[in-house]
Image (cartoon, rainbow, N blue to C red; front, side, top):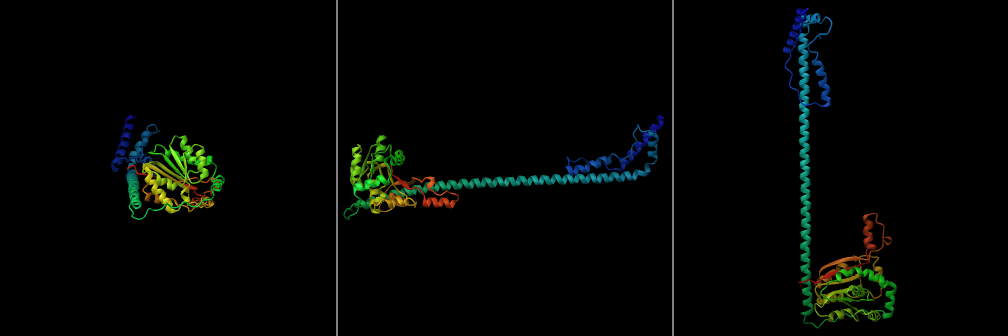
Length: 395
């Protein structure tokens, strides 16, 4: 039996060798396939296992069956070769699909990288443009501010020349407007202006601007002396001028330094550079444009270098504020913010700014549900007052 088994084994080996010789060598394996391609590889692997018939040794009559395979090998030799070639073709097709897939993925990755690079480059360019725009804006504002400042100084010089170099007779001070009887106007202020405590609380925010100045503070039109009392409490030297004799007398009785008379005339009597600040709160609306400019020019002359001017008045840009303007019969004309700033710059002040004050409570304004509501609020119910704050150049 041993020779028979050897003969059978040899026959099987010859069949396998013949099939292997008829079949081209398998191509090298490609990288891992996708799920779809794996469904093609699995049947190929299973089919390759059945290219050459084989009889397991444990099968009954294995030797006889191997001998039969050897005798009948001519029946499936061509079929085995055909099957091997078909498997090779399908395997090559699967490999080609894998290569195409890999190339497609590489191409997509390259496109993604290129797109990401372009997006990053665009983002950097946008940031650079934004930075340059911001630099340009800051430089423009700085240069405009310097030009504005130089123009204001020049305007002030021209104004001084016009005042001192003219050969015409000296200009008369504008006469103050006719007022109500002092007692009547004092009662009017008590009823409509507000209590001294309320006014003092509104004026308290000016204190930081009136400290450490190169001279005393002059309060033109000091009224009941609310600001003078605040300054005295802070140890800031100050004096006031009030045209209403009743108000001036009441201030003097409290020990405040107040002179009864016209503020414009008093300011004209001050020496050059003798004051640290000139304050006129709710005053310029009582004057004509001629008187207002004369006040600003004299304030510029009387203020020391580094001195400050504060002029508060009714905000003419708010229609609701005009009610307060027309309520007072001694008011002459509303003064728009930009007009007052221009006059101050023409008189020689620099760094002139406008601060809006006394906003209305939320309940007295429109509920802002749209941008148009905000515009209406600014027009109809804007801040009730504004303050012009300007300075004398230090040099």
